[in-house]
Length: 416
Image (cartoon, rainbow, N blue to C red; front, side, top):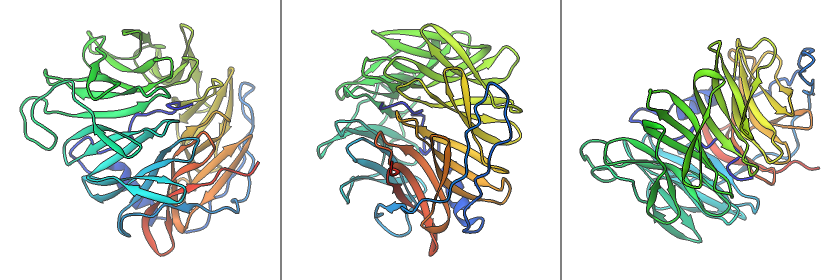
């Protein structure tokens, strides 16, 4: 299922400040030793939780490097489709990046400064042109590169226009080719946008000044967030041209991050007690997904076609669980932190774990049918994950023993 993962960029440079993700990757790559962390078992959990974390040795198959434009550019793969077309980017300065498209062992670099964000089953790639302060959505298909228009604003990409400037960002693309994201308007606001061609459609708001769309399914259900007339932020769904407020778990705000082909929506919400919890909106109901025992908050990361929801759970430490039909399957590393990244329709989870929690090594992992597997590195101290494809290929970055610079890599699908 495309767009089952949160499409909110974790790697973009929308603000004129250094990228926190890139800084983290560099620091993580230089920190710690090269030994893999220990994948420990979870203590006995409450009755509502299924115990499922089992240690396993690192796999034999190492990560595959996707060649970078130059040796000094930190890179990462960010998205891929079932046919094996993978996309990513390499930072060539603090405010620009080289986008690349990999297929069958060959990589094609895009002209200019680009950050590809997603690719659908037909091989249509979307992402953003990036400069120091600005970005503009683009579409690439079969070698044809197209800039996507703005809802409004002043000035041009890289220009110094008046109120609001001109900015847009493509966040997700459906199987049918619908692209959603956000764009500046003539009023200096940012609204959720839908592109079928080069010209966007304004999806509107709940009465407040801003909205953003982050995912879309083949049926045309678009999800995201919007400010209300009262200034609160609520999760929303657009369908048939109408915006619908998904509401909250009793608190003031909520946000939606992913939608599956059934129309189930995952996100997070404030509760009546002031906590932040992952939530599933399903057939008009808002279901509180809760937390792991002892944690104080949670947030949804992804949802798959079966309605399984990948959730980050946090308190004194960071962990995760897979929610399915009212049950929580924990994903934990003894003495460490877990950052879940993505989930595919086969129920395979990928993410990044750091162990021990303070001063430990950070490695990518795969979780499948109760087993958490350390994916290792290229011989260096660090690896991290961005996404998993429908075919089970895991995408991210890793360091080699010879250099702390993260290289764009993928881990082949696990042998069945």
